[in-house]
Image (tube, rainbow, N blue to C red; front, side, top):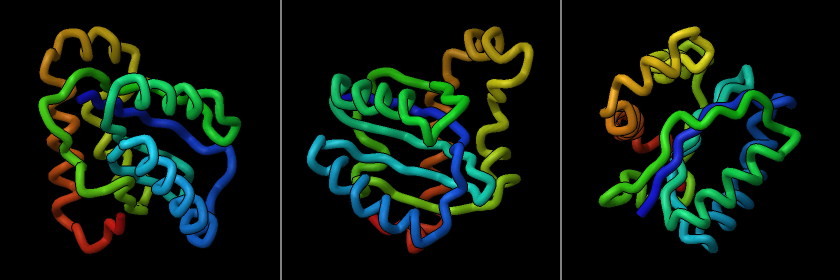
Length: 147
């Protein structure tokens, strides 16, 4: 099992109706590929997403996301093998939140900070900390995370 966590900014702001339509397609696609995870989205277009599954499928989807013109500043925050899925109950859990809350979640490792790479390399547990934080966040409001 493999996971990948990334952050990006959308080039187009999605309204709730747009997101609901996309979520139907994205969830069906993830189910077909055997992927699970969670997508956090702010009204300012900030995204944090966790993808879980078999490495080739996760990496292939991430490559598509990197090339998708609706994303900019796509930054891989964490990736690697995992013992088990943390978000296995959701083909794509989703939660919309304000930009400040999303930045607070990502703030443990700001990819725009000058010392980001050095700090990330120095902290071998960064992947686990991020995943634990996201899982804790998801568990705090499971009723708001339809799958």
